[in-house]
View 1: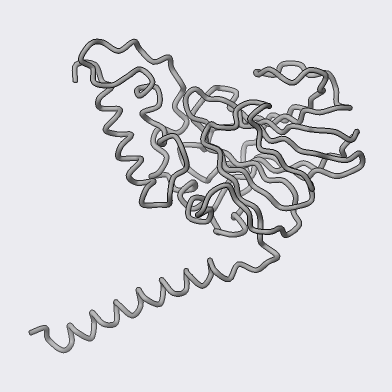
View 2: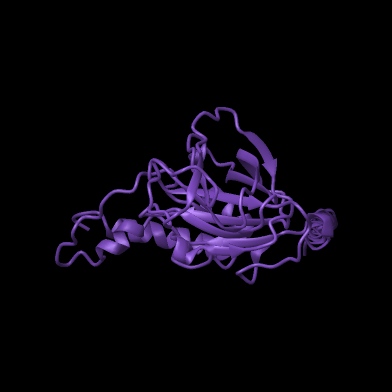
Length: 272
């Protein structure tokens, strides 16, 4: 039989844990409409102009979370805009030690902009470009994601007047071709809570957790040719340190993906 004092202590702990869980659930469920935003997730499927996320109504608040794995390819957004509109854009990264020295770049492509020069990717014909490098940012401001409260480094914030009516593209990439997590936010007006996944809040929280991101900031290297009996393909080795292709279904699945990545890396070591 459990002593009465021990039962009371155990009951008190359970009640405190239950209170914490209820409070957290209430905070997530009661995010005010003024903080609502559309949340989208990229896992390497939007790496060209043809595959870009497409948005209109530049004033609405939206964020795209992207992990640039290996190969480290850019993430693309396509925006329908009208001359004279103001585009508010932010570029940031989760506050993780592994990303502390990373400085991704952002470009705006579209009509009425200067002729592009030095872009590390192919741009659609006839579009100009403005490039925003962040390598000069030393002490990035720490901000909180408005829905989840997750902490990020804000590397860039710009307000740009659209010079001509037409289609524009925002492109973000790692100049050093490293494994990087970043996000692009546009607009600031409250919007309907839309997403390309079923559980955006949980995925956004997982996106900001270091333990779901093995080998971030590692350079992308050419995968070796597999030897007979390796038990792992070159493609598997090239992506072993990154998340499984496709969206992570929450924190638990993120942990499973990290464990699977570790097992895959071990299979890729010569002699195993």
